[in-house]
Amino acid sequence: MPRIVGVDVPNNKQAWIALTYIHGIGRYRAQLILDEAGVDGTVKAGKMTEEEVTKIAQIITRDYPVEGQLRRQVSQDIVRLKDIACYRGIRHRRGMPVRGQMTQSNARTRKGKKKTVAGKKGVKEMR
Image (cartoon, rainbow, N blue to C red; front, side):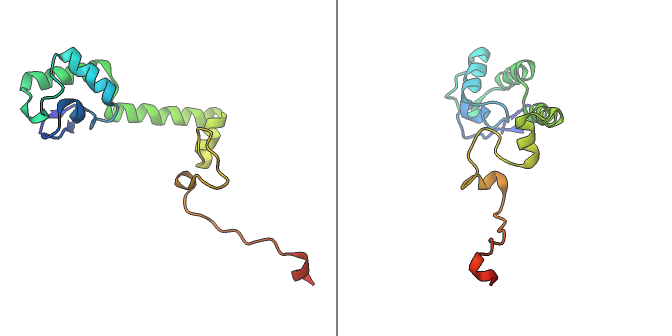
């Protein structure tokens, strides 16, 4: 199992798919990295030579924020939004959808488990 920038990528996957197991690298970036390294994307990750793996690792560390560095950067961006109290920061703070989704009937993933509120008493019940 090749280890690239601290992540064990699977042996039995093609190289371009195996690179997507690294946080911050998707399909497009994986293809760009392999083209720059001069590695065939269809070769299995376990069949790559050590030189190819080190070349890919060098390109990734040089050009792209990945894994811990990327996660830290994203969390700092969210903290900054919360600090300046912009609309997106307020939505993050309240735990609500940030990108404009409706919340009246959906958004359970972001809002969490449903919290039932007691219904309003009718006029007839009060007499």
